[in-house]
Length: 215
Image 1 (cartoon, rainbow, N blue to C red):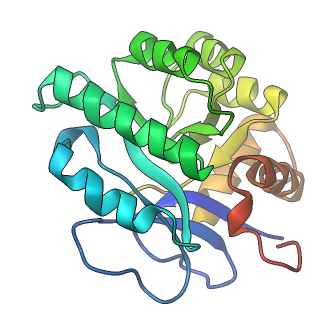
Image 2: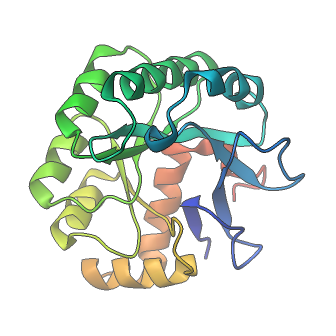
């Protein structure tokens, strides 16, 4: 059984797991193995970081742009958040890589940006904790939803039905297996069935982390 952690801040506990590790673009270089996401978080939005992001975004081991997004609780000025986020959306579209989204109390603004752009690339909401109604709106708009240690059960069911459910550990000291076990219990499914579906969703959302043998 293959486990996929699409957003984590540490190397996977098991080397056989597939993981997208969040990397800091302010640090030079990337480790020689594994897959990474690089982006400018809305809490650190700074237009001077955009050239650094562009310089590394095209590397083969960079699987996604992010996390990036909009956060109305962040101290960063809102116009700057919008500017830096828009620049990252354009970059992701240019290089055809998915976006991992951080969003706090800015769902309507996020969906407006999604509707306005024409880049046909996956947008993934990481660490989604919203309710089933919000989940349904986002799924209709084409987003993937990724769930970690805390989530709304109805939202998980909605994402499962839409075949756009993903899993992650984020910055929690967890094994991704714990998240899978919890999600499988919520959905009343065998864990292996859940793992098969998440793997299929990863093929659609972040295909570059799958190995040549289909893993």
